Image (cartoon, rainbow, N blue to C red):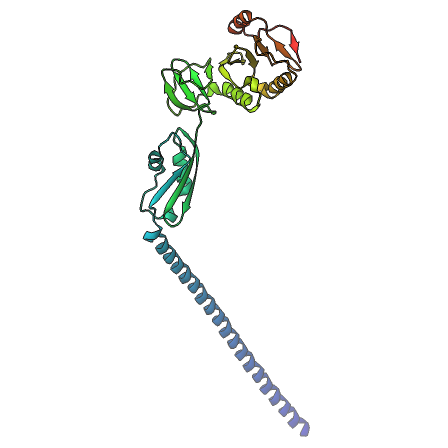
Length: 296
């Protein structure tokens, strides 16, 4: 009897303990769900707050950008020489009164650089109301002579067209055609390349050049001012040819009264014969026309 009673009590306690555990488990699950919902709700509220803050900042920034005190009142232009500043301001497309911070600087730069006489520009802002434009104008380097005289820069872009020789700059001949203002004369590039190489060489004896003749076989005939001495060169071998010329000048072997020198041959400089014979050969023959009187 006692054993059975004990068994009954044990079973009742077991049932009660199991119920307590289940009740605790339900409470724990319920509490966990509540916590989870709280964090989800908190995250949503935080996200909404961020969105509201961003919108408020954007609205505020737009208000700031459109403030009358931050609108364009002046366009300041520097670096110009030939192109009028009023013309640069007009082609820039910048309008007085537009928001300073909304001006597309790169777009303005491209518009200004589209002018034939301007190679590039730098554009910036100066708070509170100024757009700064610094232009780099193309510099005349030579004159192409055919039916007219076309002044060009180092890239062969036509800057001016005249019926008479404008003076000062070397003439490039051997190029045929007629070109418009701002057009590039690609056929003149070999002559311009030679001119630039000689100017950068700092050889005083060849600084003053009167004419550069471009021949169909690739030769470039450079006529020096004074006695009319010529240099025969090729754009493809300029570095070595300039080096040979420098060595000849430094060794006092350059004679400015000579008919000319052919710089195309590796390891030596060929001195040309008398002026009459040299002129005839340069004009009529496809070759260089020179003797084997070498000067190293």
